Image 1 (cartoon, rainbow, N blue to C red):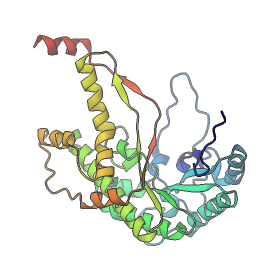
Image 2: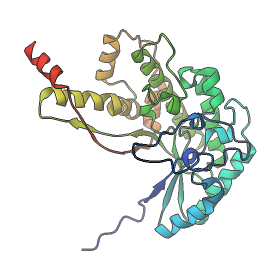
Image 3: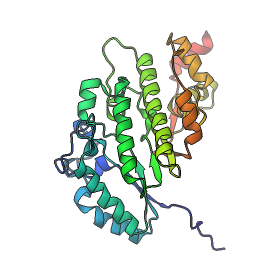
Image 4: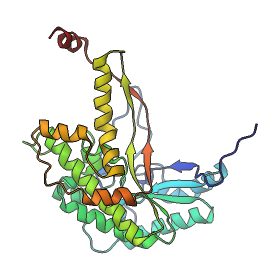
Length: 321
């Protein structure tokens, strides 16, 4: 029996432009947090490229799109680099060279009948905002992000239908990812739980405000939030490992999905805040509730699953006690 995909199914591919473009000194582009990243090859591997060149997508995007067309792509998820449009991040007007570059890319996609799906921030916060404000830990950065969103969407809304507000937003509050994803580093004296909540609240608020603003600017747009889903399973068939895996999934995925799709904190998360003495009574979730209604779909990336193991000593101690 022959089976075919529905013609409306948008099969295609995705790229992080900040990881692929190169051309970091072209078109008045500003430095961003990804430029500060020190890439350490995995064990047994050697570095295969220079981030200044990357995949040379900046200069070769037409060749790349030609290959996509030959492969039958119907959609291409790209990201518009924040620092290519606002080099420092706080400019009142966008960088025209940056807009013209993405004009050419998006126009060429449309000429080849490939639907552009645009991510509005993807590990590319201007380094200036990170250095001066410590990224999204400072709520003022939300206003700079919204300005970026408004100006990009206004410029491209006649050609772009699908928008993603914030790539892998659920990785932002974790210490090992916060600089790259949110432009933030945990200050001395701030505990991990408070830092987690502040970044979680501010980035989710930024995304929600962006969703609501895009809906105002482009009523027919299809708007999405975005998380990475790497599900964790119990290593062994015992209650402790199962509970550990459950907690890992709650922290990594569920609490973000609840806020983005339903507009409220999960009971698990409010209990976590109360147990850690974190006051959330002044958190304003009204914009999140509105965004949950304005969001059309939820984008995900999935790299791998994993297993959670409670060390044997902890296992024995728990049962002995």
